[in-house]
Structure formats: structure tokens, C-alpha cells
Image 1 (spheres, protein in one colour):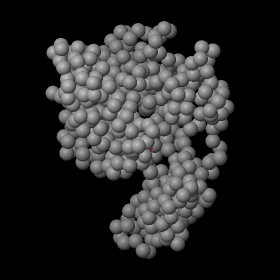
Image 2 (spheres, rainbow, N blue to C red; image 1 turned 45 degrees about the vertical axis):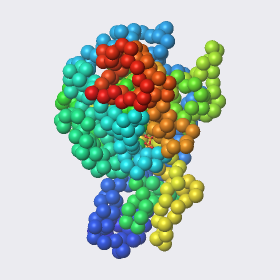
Image 3 (tube, rainbow, N blue to C red; image 1 turned 180 degrees about the vertical axis):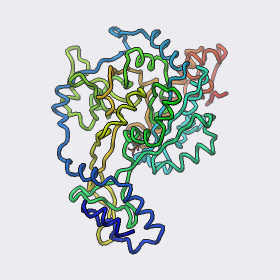
Image 4 (cartoon, helix red, strand yellow; image 1 turned 90 degrees about the horizontal axis):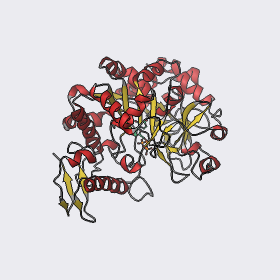
Length: 464
Ligand code: UTP
């Protein structure tokens, strides 16, 4: 086995991966061989060789203009909210909408020792992100009297535990045939100076999930794309595991996507802080694309229009409507989505077998991003949402300045308080409130549920 692996590695100068082979036991060798055989060596080599040919984001941002948009103020929108809601509701009721939830990330910033979806975020209920998000799918399916399948992406870092959790929790009520779990691929970390693949341990490569854009290849490879097509799903509502505030399958949002004949529609929020850590959706040469916040130079980020508003205003919370036709078309294209490079500190084992923990970035990592589908999408546009009604990501451990548990819970409570007050309830100052999506999906749903004059004075979780 060693000889054939060596023959694979040598042409690419990666034979060091077998340096500790003779020390490994049988199981260790089998596992290492499996990892090496799964590598796409020519791709890894190509990526390293092209490491300095990055896009010129400065020039790009200078040429970019704002994307076509459905704005919240509505003045120039081509469709009314009523038209959009009717169109979205019709597609939902016809069973044409599925959901994709990406949950393959390692969640390093949060530092939670399980898949992030298992984080108990409910401010009163302590329900997990998974339970809240899957509850929203179930509630939407019930409202429209249809099945709404969930295509759930995991990675080798999260797969086994996520599957076990869904089994244990009986898929949070989702019928078995409506859950399709598929696992994304990985990419190796390379020593930046030499291009050599790093070993995490003597018997294991330093691998990490290949980015949420790994979804496209994984959807096709796993059979999920065939599955959704055979079910008659035409559009997917795409969302991420860290945002419990997301309005899953909102009919108005889906309606704009459908009315515009768009193949990829990102939700956006109007950036307040020019330097907010959000990618921005822009238009360049008639095509939409996302520039990551780390690639957007400060002058461009601060640029303002004559009326004082930010030019690059459309921040992306990573919630999209995507047509199945686009997914199929691009899944079949030769190169697939491009890779983005990140310089990271990656611990490794050196040639002498010593465990090294670098103090400075030493490695290149490669990730694909789902928003790179956007330039290929026909009729793409963005839909502005109110962040208070749709975006509160859990990214960081307690104590960080943004996107912590405390901030997410505050936004969840504030949303549910607003819904309750709109439905005629009186919520005492400081009383935490939380509403299960199966109890009410939105303020309208809540109105039908609660008695006028309801007064809430202590922590309350409204559930069925
Ligand atoms: P982030 O980019 O915030 O990464 O993921 P993360 O792994 O959750 O957290 P950090 O950066 O390590 O702290 C945004 C969404 O994309 C998913 C995550 O699970 C999350 O839902 N994701 C990310 C994947 O599914 N696969 C990946 O390879 C990366």
C-alpha cells in the first residue's frame, strides 16, 4: 500500500505525508491512505501555483455599482408586497420550495465542543439552533399544507454527531422522507512557504471543510440534487445554521425571486456602519457578485452617494433563494465554484515529528463560497430585509463585541415582544419572551392565537 501511495504523491512533491507510516498501526495506515486517496492532487498543486494571482478587488470595487434591489421603502419597486406574497405562497402551496441548511462549519470562533446547530440558544426555552430552525420549516409546511424537504449539509467535522442528534430528537418532527443529510468535502491546509500539505498528527492530514460553497458539488455527488428535482422542487431557500432569527421560506421574499424570474436572490440588509463585517452585493459589468468585507477596501466601503447613503449598501446575511436549474447547470460545469484563499495559523507536525503551534499565519486554506453562484445567475436581484426580523448570527464566544449568544437572544426576545405587542399583549419591561415557530410563525399568526389584553410579567415560552 505504501508504494502505491508514494507513486501518487511523488509527482506532486508530497511524499512527506508518509514520513511516519512505519509507526502507524493498521487502522492508522488505512485511515491515512483513505485521506490521501481522496485528495485532488492536481487541484491542490494548481491552487498553490496560483496563490499570487488573486482578483484585484480594489479595481473591482471601484467599477462596481449597486445591485438591482427590492428596497424596504418600496418607492421604485417593480412589484408590490401583496403581489410577492401571493406568488410566494402559491409556489409554497404547490410544493415547489425546498430548503438547504448548511451546517458543516467548524465554528472555531464560538468554541462550542459540538456542531453549532446543537447550541442551546432559546432565551427562555434553551432550545437548540437546530430545533428552532427545523421548527420553522415544519411550521411553514403546515401553513401551506405541503411537504417542505430539508437538505442538510454537514461536514466530516459535524456529520456523525449531527445525524445522531437528529435521530435522537426524532428530526424535530420532520418526516423521515423530508430530511436528506449530505456531507461536504474537505480541503487540505498547505504550508504557505513550500506548498506542502500539512500533517495535523503523524497519521492525519490537516483537513477542513471546503466552505459552504462546497454545497454545490456535495449536492450533486450525494444524489440530493437528483432527489429534489424528482420531487418537483424548483427553488431552494438557503440559510445558515447560526441565524435563529431567519424567516424560513418567507412568501414575500420568495415571491420577489419568482416574479423577477431570478435564479439567485440574496436577502440583503442596508449597512449602517460602512466597515460592518458583512460581504456586500454589487453589480459589475451587468452581473451581481459579493465582495467579502475583508476584500472591500476602506475608501470603497466609505463611499457615499450624493444623498449621503452608502454606495455599497447591500450587506449580505447569507440567506438566499436559489433555483434548482442554476444548481444543475453549475454542478455540471468543469471547474465548479472558485476557491478563496485564507492565510491561517494551522498547528502541524514537522519533519522531526514535533507538534508545532504557530504564532503567525503559516498556512493557506481553501474554501468555496455559495455566493459565487451569483455571477452566473440570470435576472438576479437582491431583496432588502429588516435585520431585526431576520438576522442575528451566533458567531462568537461570550465577551466578544458582536454576534454573541447574549446579543442573539436579545434580538430574539425583542422580535417576539414586538409580535406580542402587535397582537395586543402587554409584556412587562424586562420579561423575556420566546415563541415556538409551531405556536406562531409571525406576528399575524400570533394574533390568531392569543387573547387580547394578555399580560406577561415573567419569562414566558409560548409553545403548542
Ligand atoms: P462561518 O463562515 O461563520 O464559519 O459559516 P463557521 O465554521 O460557522 O465558524 P468559524 O468561522 O469557524 O468561527 C457560516 C455558515 O456556513 C456553514 C456554517 O456551518 C454556517 O452555517 N459552513 C461553513 C459550512 O457548512 N461549511 C463550511 O465549510 C463552512
